[in-house]
Length: 259
Picture 1: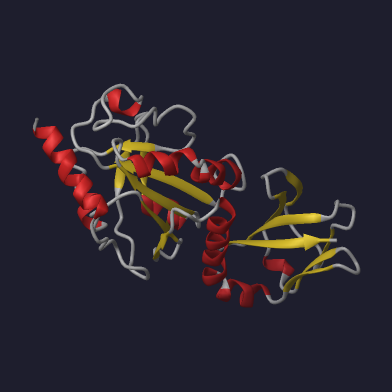
Picture 2: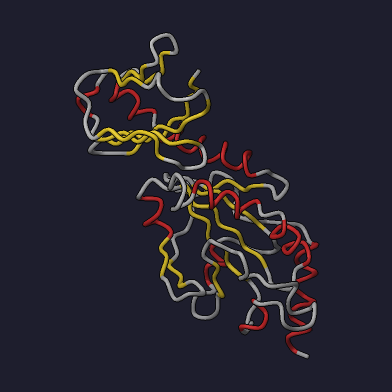
């Protein structure tokens, strides 16, 4: 009965006015252990120049389940996560308290669980219990689902659950643009010359490695060091490619269309 009352109260919160963490805020750090026993620290990902998508959901929440079924975050993670281009990490935090394993695999009444949250989910999912539930206070959680994009500079932006995978990825790229102004200046001009089929980097001697990848994460070219300011890529098929350029201080990711 107590849990039913708590769930009912959380439903009221779900339909109430959101007062989540404001856009432009600095993301509070957290360290949590996922459902498989693996520890994750938010700032460790951010310090590695990885943009983190944090979803807060509840196992009993119909809207949360509907969003889960869109596979938006699953597709984002598969394409741009650790087994893709490694630009993104997705962390999903379950808000209901005192949930057991059954709630995560869809066993129980609807006021406890809407379905099997673990099946087919490639990204880390967290059953957040005491003493870790302070993370929900840090993020001002008063409803769900809520999705945040956290750039490597630790700045938060709320993401609409109606955003497509591509729209979220464009916001991830905006993180790189915001972070890379100084790095671009440091490397000089970075551009693709369609006439010659060359990637040009003015300060090429500062480059330690370059990886060229398709948007699905397939690596098509790796260069350990540049011996001139140009790398010829004219042999690649037309399409959109991601360029991961590493220096001693940072990693710069750029997207170019090769024609």
